Amino acid sequence: MSKNCIMDTYGRFNVNFERGIGCKLYDALGTEYVDFVSGVAVNCLGHCHPTIINALAKQSSQLIHVSNYYWNLPQALLSEKLIDNCDHSKVFFCNSGTESVETALKMARKYGKLKGGPDKNVFIYMNNSFHGRTMGALSVTGQERYQEDFRPLIGGTRNVIFNDIEDLKRNFDGTVCGIIIEPIQGEGGINIANAEFLQEAKNLCDKYDALLIFDEVQCGMGRLGSLFAYKKFSVIPDIICIAKALGGGFPIGATVASEKASSAFVPGDHGCTFGGNPLGCAVGVAVLTELIDGGIISQIEEKSIYLKDELLKLKEKYGIIDEVKGMGLLIGISLKTDAKEFSKLCFDKKLLLVTAGENVVRLLPPLNVSKKDIDESLAILEVVLSEIAG
Figure 1 (cartoon, rainbow, N blue to C red):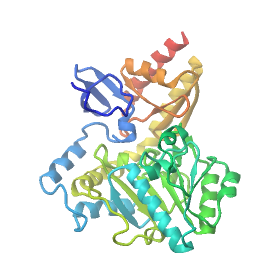
Figure 2: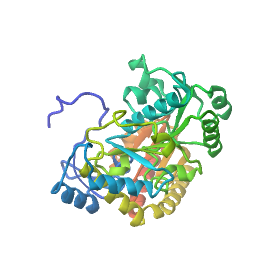
Figure 3: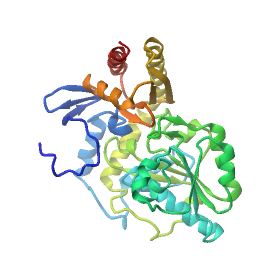
Figure 4: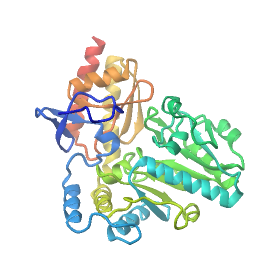
């Protein structure tokens, strides 16, 4: 297989996957791997789920793409499914998480100018956050290693300390048009927002007429045990960014907004050529139906408790794990050893994990993961931990 034509933008493992089913991936030699990366929280139903295959087959035989100058039924059905399960009223469809974030930033900046004039244009974002790699999303990503080679970034931003209410208050004033927060920082190391911090952000947005944006691209769409992550924190944002699991492996993203926030947009303000195409939306409807009506989300808390309890046993037994953190099936293991090397050792034992932040590995199984697959992953983790300890 030639690799010379692909840009060098990822540090890839030396494997070529050719087939997947459920929680398992198979390379070109037929070797089986347990996949607890799930495309980085994308494959919420595992690989090649019949629901997704059937939706793709049926819709692709009818209509794949049509311009947003016209209506299409799958887009309407997916928007209704989303709105019926949240406290918001409008949806904009796109293709990815970073596009969803760009939409939210544009919406908030226009809202600010409409409400407070041209000087109400500042975004507040969190240290250690990650919101995407386009220039707008990168400008509100609180990790210098992602930003340094691409400066100058978009201006009008302020970085505050995650979960520090006093720092948030110091930086909030009438020039702020929006604040963007991950309820759980995924790329940053599985760091959970305090409910009090989120509530204060909401209070300040109400006080200064700014918009609260939740980036739920990784932690949303069922991963925490509710379709939308904000429901676990009892704070309703003005705008929600979603993608990844929304398509279960098919590229689709969306920005969900309140009537107040979405009213800033008028025809011509924003667009997305492929956003809301019939094929992607048909898959999105199928995925949400399986997650909600199929009862998968309702089982996540039980699976989470079991997995975390077993990880805590490994923590006590081997002394290599510093902390087990996260919610639902977004779980991080903070290690006393190098996370990248640990991930490589797991890969060698045929368990796929992905790193996050400082010495953290993420466990992101499909949301319909079986107890058998969880036990298999735990057995491999124990082998690796015992080898390191020994």
